[in-house]
Every structure is written in C-alpha cells, then in structure tokens.
Image (cartoon, rainbow, N blue to C red):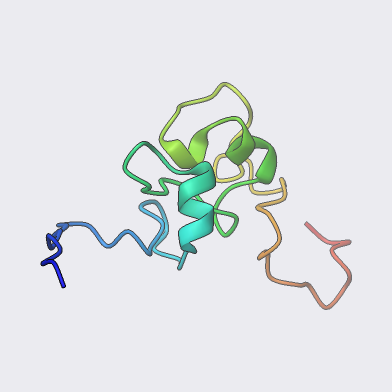
Length: 87
C-alpha cells in the first residue's frame, strides 16, 4: 500500500469562516472557494447570495441579511412563536 500525503490546514474547513456553523463537505465543494472553504453558509446568509458566490468569498451588492436583519438568513433561522409576524 502506497503512503498517502497528509495535508495540514490552519483553518477548520468544516466550519463557516463567517459564523462558525458546521458546513458539509458537499456544501464546501459546491459553494466554497477553490480550496473548498465556505466563507458564508445558510446559517448566516441567504441562499440567493450563496448561489451568487458569497460562500466562495465573493462580495455582492445584493442585500446582506446581516445588514438588514428583517431579511431571511436561510433555512436555519430560529422559528418565532408568533409565526414571524413581529419584526
């Protein structure tokens, strides 16, 4: 059996670089940068922005949920007991 090279990384690639939430390998490969690092994820950004490149580190003019808290931050937004009626 041949020896395989061991790669050491200084960043934890299984975490979003923005919020620290866990991101899957498939998410990182699909939406992350060329080194499979996710800079944003569904916990801290909207899928519209992620699909436009924010998970790969791209800056957009598209509204950021962090700057406008009333915007959806993806599927992991905490549920509100009032059904989201009060903002």
